[in-house]
Structure formats: structure tokens, C-alpha cells
Image (cartoon, rainbow over all chains, first blue to last red; front, side, top):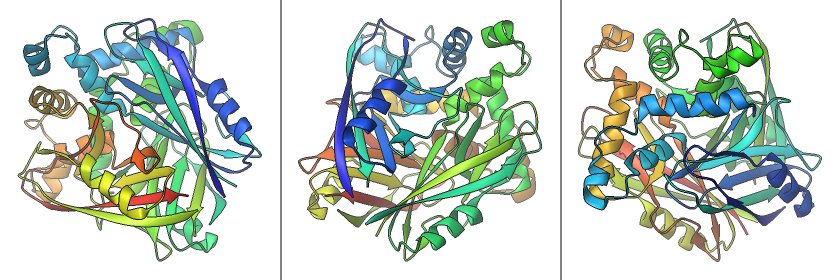
Length: 139
Length: 139
Length: 139
């Protein structure tokens, strides 16, 4: 058993940019030389999130539309009244989606559905550089 | 320390079928013979999700009602325009709930509240066969 | 490699009380003497949840406001019709946010963004005592 730490660096294009990081995470697992275990992907930061989706253009539009129902851009946020950075909705969306995702692997490969990809969602209102952590535990 | 992989096979009855998998996951932990650690339950697939709930008939109705507020069935999805499978809302709900749940265990037993069960939620619009992975890490 | 179990005991003040548990979790990791791994924080119970947020007064108001959109207090719940405890919305919110959070650590310290704190959210309609589990796995 061992722990191996991988990193995935991204440049996002701004709000609702959704990036497929499946290959990056799979590469980190491969490089760890561990055969069986779990990979926890984590975003240090409070305006981005991780989940899985069928990565195709339609859903890249539909997911942000649903987040707009939960935390609309054009409503009043106490966060924005205090900090004037216009990203209150980004923080709320990130807290609800969550900063962490744990995916099992076997034979050195992530166990995912055929139409299931690991995604990072930029929720902040501007382009950002993101350094995700991939903490891999296994044998 | 070791990693043991369990599987839970389910047949779901269609959209919003919510299945209590607590005993299945508990059995996988027991069979692993590990005493203390974590169990990560994961659904390979992009139209199902895992979480916990008090498993009683009222909430099995109330949770889908809330998901209908976030991603209504009867609205337009870009996913459906492209793929014509009528499950755009299923994908969006699955991404928001998430495909993964990690539960600690001690003395070979899952640590859960008395009124807290582990559930798989079928979000797709038809009955499906689901093979959940239970990745157990511990000592 | 080892597993170390920490506990965090909280007294919450009632619905939508959001408590910063970052220091408690960090202390549990420090006490484990493990240097690198993951900490899974888990709430045994079906009316509380864990996530991360920038812990500042504005967002402590904005997050519950968004949850009110997803599962409003003043609507009808099947759960309440059966059990008459008035917390149907609490259960639904807890299932959507999730009972579990996994955070990586390195050099004995949690890997978090500067403005990112680990929070427990009380979703039940009354003050509660909560005993969170911190399952730490690493080397």
C-alpha cells in the first residue's frame, strides 16, 4: 500500500468552462504504478467543483442552466455586498457541487462508465489557473 | 492495510427508483475482513447517483420532487436535441448529486446514523441494470 | 500505511447553522502523525451535510438561500405528512449536499485553498449535538 500525489494544472476560460480531466487523472493513476485503489481529485479553492458527466456539447450547456436555477447570477448576494467581486453565485454553486470526487481504479485503470468523464467546472466569473490534486491510495 | 473490491448488482425499475444498498455495502465490508477504513461506493455511468437518506416512503417521493425543481423533465435540453434519448434532465441531476460516496467503517461495520441509509438513485428514464463498485481500503 | 479515526463533536444552534470545522479536522490529521493521505469527514445522520466554502458572513446567508430554492421550507413534504417532525426539507437538502467530504493532506497538513474552509451545515430544524467522524488514511 502507498500514497502517491499527482497534480493537474488547468487554465480555464471563465465562468461555466467545463474541462474533461479524465485523461489527466488516468495518467496520474498510471504514473503511480499502483494497480488497485482510489483516486481522490480535489480542487483547492472555493469557486470550482468536480463531478462526472457524459462529456458532450449539449450537457456542457444544460448543466450550467440547472445551476442558474439553484443560484442565479442576477439576484442579490450578501457575499457581493461585502466583497464586490460579483461571484456570490459562483461560491454557492461550488459548495453545492462539492470540491472533491473519489473514483476507484483496478488494473491501473479508472473504473468509469463508457459515457462518463471526470470534469472540472470553473464557476468563478473570470479565467483562472487551477491546480487540482490527485491523491492516489492503493496497492 | 489492503484494498478489497466488492460489487453490488441492481435491477432498477426506471426513473426515480431509489434503492437502499446499505446491507449490500455492509456485506462487502464484512466480506473484506478489514476492521477499520473507508468504503467508496461508485456508479460507473452518468445517469445514476449515490447519497444517503432516511429510507422511508415519504422521502422517496420528496427527493425526486426537489430534483424536478433543479432539472425539470418538461423543459428543453441541448442534450436531447442532439441525442434524442429524452434523458437530458437525468444527466444533469446525476452530475449534481454525484457518482461517488465514501463511508467510514470501524470494527468491520459501517459508521452510519440510525436513520441513515446508503441509496442508489436511478435517474435514467428507463429500467437499468447497475453494477456498483465498492472499493474498500483499510486494515 | 495506517488508518486513524478522529472525532469532532459539535453543538449546533439550529437550522442553517454553518460551522467551520477546518481546524478540528486539521488537528485530527496532525494527531494521526500521518504525513500524506486523505481525510474523509462524515456525518452519521440524515439531516446534516459537509462541504467547503469561503467562510465569511455573506455566504453563510447565501448558501441557505439557495437551498431554499431547491427544497423550500413552506411547501408540502410526504415525509412531514407521515412523521410530523417538520423537517422534510432538511432531509432533502442533506441528501443533495451529501454526508461525506474527502480532503487530501501532505506534510501533515490539509491541502485547501486560502479562502476555502471545511464546513458542517446543520439542516435540521432544531439545535443538535453532532459527532463527526474523521477517517484518516495515509503514511
